[in-house]
Image (cartoon, rainbow, N blue to C red):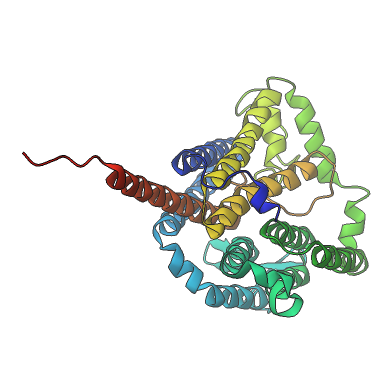
Length: 380
């Protein structure tokens, strides 16, 4: 019996209710993110920041709608092509002239005023590919090379390309995300432990040897000190919306990776807890959705997407509070980064699609049940 099968009676609960909670919490995060981005935007570039973030929101909304309406079976059939395309993008971004280099990292494609980070799409690709593989042939996970190594190898290839950019934080995130998905899907423990013992220490050692900034960030970082200072200045109720001072260049990446610190300054502890409660709501929606789903693919998708969102949020909060060194991990739906917003919007759209499909199946079964057991009236 797998850990996934122990999540209490599949098919219990209402998929529509789980979808409503998931979407409501995501919309709440988007609203708080937009309000914060507007508050922290400097007057000299206020219009540009708002227009850019608004365009990112519009593009993400379109992507969400497409993800909700696209037949899941078509997505599953297209997974080999999608995986190959994402791998090609991760490779192409490393090529000078194609990928844009910023602060020593080559992670972005730039088209006009917009930038795109393929590693954000790699996250949802990994979730869907593993869910599809397990949903179709979970028993193959017992076989090492022809089973387990197919999704595990895809995850490690993605992680390796992302590491070369370099992006140490997302590399560890992808490895951990893939590992959890495989564990929940029923992969043998011996394979998971062996993969973790081989991959994670190797990545960490390479990071400290090759990427000098990783070692420096573990001991001292200006961003973290300023972030903690901003959180402290907010107190329980905050200094007031728009009244924060740390946004004026005192917290680097204040509109992106460190946006939570500025939320804490202006909205205080209560505002920060309100924001964090939305992530808890997403986690609860995932649990309810898993219980309501009967199809293994749907269950893994509905588990993987909320887990990915909350896991990244925990990662970001650890950085903002100084528990972990800065790693360039955005706060989902709140940070101003367009690639992360687009990627997670697609992910939530696919999860909502799976829950919608489960709701349709439940309705069809209920109608069948009613027809079978409907009393037959004798003709007059």
